[in-house]
Image (tube, rainbow, N blue to C red):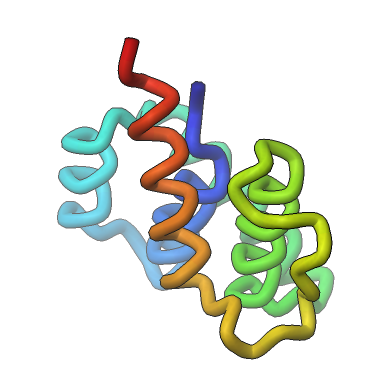
Length: 101
């Protein structure tokens, strides 16, 4: 299973220009570089339309968490405790466990 929110989180770091460390981190964590590039292009288009990219990535984690069950459906997107960092930790644990046979 692919941790799609993580791909977008990394892609958001590329919006300020190419960063070798982002590509290195992506490769080390199994993120396909073509998908990363495509995700950055998607975020560029969303940003041009006025989207707050940091909030969009946070919502991507929330939706992914609801869909896969690592975040309860009762969790509110308005909850300030649901930071991108905290959601990313839940996602990472879920995907790591899902990869274990």
